[in-house]
Image (cartoon, rainbow, N blue to C red; front, top):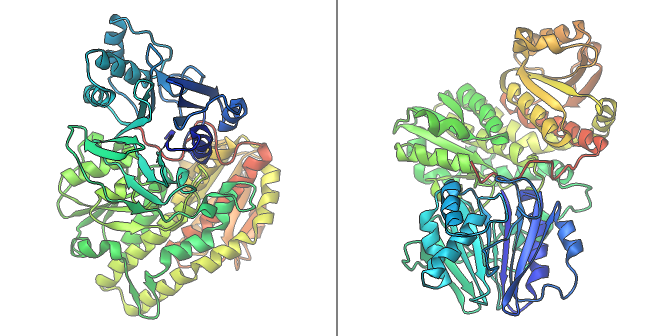
Length: 610
């Protein structure tokens, strides 16, 4: 969740590290710090808040050195403060550590180190590592050996970078459960927790796997296992373009990413949905196609927005392809001893491909014999590497913490998987052709929804001071209600709940009065009349109705105070269109309330801790 940047080379490290931290600020931002090797000692600077606070405090020449590292923190142990910010030093100020992850047995280790005379400055679990490495070096051995021995003693997850004033010109890197990538530049090396921090300097990278350890110096990069076995890593090429991680004239990344959706959905379809040939081709599933077609059950794992995508996928897979499908919170999956059969196919959905809970859940399913597949955005991510096949969503880098384009791309890929299976399971050709054409038309229809952004902005101004929102939907639009409510909570800090519209009368209807905004998703589908009945129940209690409805619905205006129009499409594909106005509504509400849209409080983009 936090951001890591390291540098070894011939240039000044501090400006390069600082620039990388800015690119990773969306990963965690309650505090930031950096350290460099300078004149035989470690010079360090830490600040609470945004990276800009760190930048303002960094004066030219005060941190001169060609080896350095930095960190943006998302607090797990200890409140945001300069003392708790990374890097953390040992007692002598000679060893510095930055760390992503959680050291689960830190309290036991800390108690022993305190008894041995170590003095701790922070409340973090990370500081245990710097003192433990110091303690092990006292017993003899170099830094590399001490780090390796320390990591054998800790339980939990980590992506760490370590440097010592006693061994200049060197950084030591190790990973278990928290991503790290090493970039190869011209006579320089860069380390980061996310490739976006490296792309300005190099496209040649290696990804560390769990249990791997690297020593980075001007002599090169030496990679070994934690058990000191040499390994050869293959260099990969980054495909990210620098302009993809810039705002491109938009006020916020979130708004840019919402408006990118016609193109990102098209990218998810490109080369896969072959309408003229009447086929869907998903190359990442070819090697497991027989197992996928023979699946007795599909299980979808995800967290947050990815879980909502899975819920829509369940409607698609059961309603179109006729395959029993279950959707599980990845964070709960492995703690209830789930019943998994070898005939099951499990899809793990994660934008980053690094979500700790989802990764742990897929490993559990894999250990029990299921075929495990991934739907991820980030090429080379851990989930992509550990699954037996899968599909990239090709949404491009998503910087805004609140996921938008990744969600619609996940739904698009789930629709493609559904069509692939439906065709193999004998869906009539005429129905299959209709579905292909509807899916092919979605990018243009999303573009049409975006043309109505001005109207949605006006609605946001009306309701910007509301304290609560209710979102209602039925069928495959119930997950859209959940997602709309989540978006509003994430970035505007307004309490919101999503409900199946028919469930409203089983409790939530007690909340409805003339002050309660209620967003109703009312497409003209097979259950349109049922949803209209629920809308009438809201109106009878004087709730303020905002309806997301089709362009040809001439009746909804008699019930709703505000109507947001979307084009019609095939029912199970409707969520891809219907969620876009809710993304815009949450965005404009947040802007009107003056919150930090791209970096909402307490949240981080990639959740790499349990």
